[in-house]
Length: 395
Image (cartoon, rainbow, N blue to C red):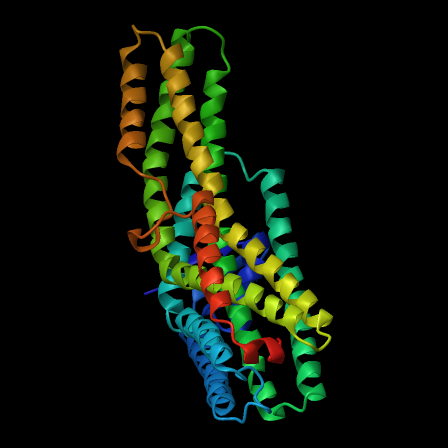
């Protein structure tokens, strides 16, 4: 029995190619004139599991060695507070990498399925607009910037360890943090580009629906017939679209939860390290600059995670407005068109379009505001537990 397959191109193809190399996309990719044909590969899955397991094991070994090292030679855990923060931070990243590798078959098979469903919906609508291409280009440029910041972090951490005579073996083992952080970025990329494809599909449906509202006054008999066919097609597509949103959420929900936990932890820890570097008696301006860069990176990452979901919700609101406008313009005597619009209204009312991992919360801009409020509270608590040893040690 042949495995499910799908054609991808553009930003999604780039994300999947890099994810496959890093270890969080067990796919076979074959070049075709129209793009890349992807299928699940058990051999690549075995490679992914092995490479991620080895690197995570190296990180755990480094964590244990650093925990048992003398504070003067420890790399990351020189004070009790830093031990707790680093164990939680590093542990979350390692767990995310393991989840990304081990649940690869489930995630990739579901991704192929919902991408094929999106293609069916898009079959009779226009191709993706140039604005969508610009958004995907911005996404890839942002991730390239993240890689540069991560490279700067590796260089500054290693130079700091050399200057202060920290244990070199532990420093080398901690390079696994950079690798597992890259897997986290790629897991986010898979969801983000998938959510952008979902948004693009709904936007195309709305554009097709909007063309039916361009006529002034009431519809003629011929226009009503054409509009009935269009509304019926879009209503059925919208019903399938709601199912796809649910499938996308289920496909990535564990990764989304871990991503939000990771960004929440880092948006607490990073300002804390900034305050320590500022209060340290030693000159640590380089560390302050590095930590401020990480603050910006994590906040941008959080925005990129929720923004495609917000765009999709805006398009859903636009669908409501367009259906309402069509209902106002439809003739009261045209029972068939009114019946189609009434059916479409039922689809809009009964189907909730929202990215809600495990039903715990809804991905959107209000989530960012909630996270910022929670982080402010935790920062106050952590600053109160700041010890004299933390301030002297600095970053």
